[in-house]
Image 1: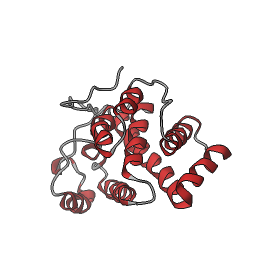
Image 2: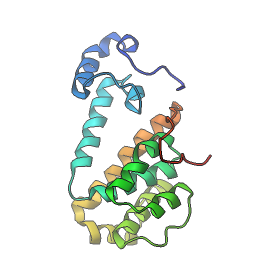
Image 3: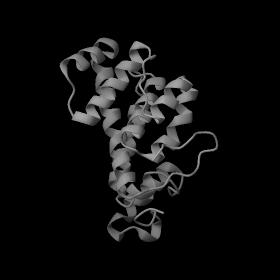
Image 4: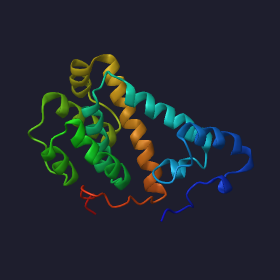
Length: 185
C-alpha cells in the first residue's frame, strides 16, 4: 500500500482534469500500477516524464541491453523494488547475463563484465553515489558511447532515479515477480 492513494479520475484536482484525460488517453487507460499510478496525481509532470522516458528508451546511442543494465543498477543502488521488478527479467531478455543480474541484486562485485557493461555500471554508480562524474569515467563513457551516448546514459540514470525517488518516497510496493527474486532488505 502506497502512502497516498493511487491515482484515478476521482482523485485528480479539477484544474488537472484535462491533462489527466490526455495522459490516460496517451497510455490507453488509467495507470493501475507502477510509478505513474502515483506521479499522475500531477498529470502534466507525468506526461513530461513519460515523454522523456520513452524518448530515451528509443535512443539508439545506448543499446537496449546496456539501458536495462542501467535500470537494474539504479534499482539496486536506490533500493527501488518496483524498478527491479520491472527490469530484472527484461535485462536478462535483453542479453544481460544471469550472473550480472544476480550479483547486482546481491550487491556483489561485478568482475566479469565486458568493457561497455563495466563502463555503464561505473558511470551509473558514480553519478548516483557522488552526483558527479570523474574525468576518467567521463572519458571512458565518451570513448565507448560517444557524446550522444554519454548524454543518453546521463539522462537515463537521471530519469530512472526520478522514478525511484517517487516510488521510494510514497512506498510503492512491487508485486511478487513470477521468476525474479526481489531485492534483499
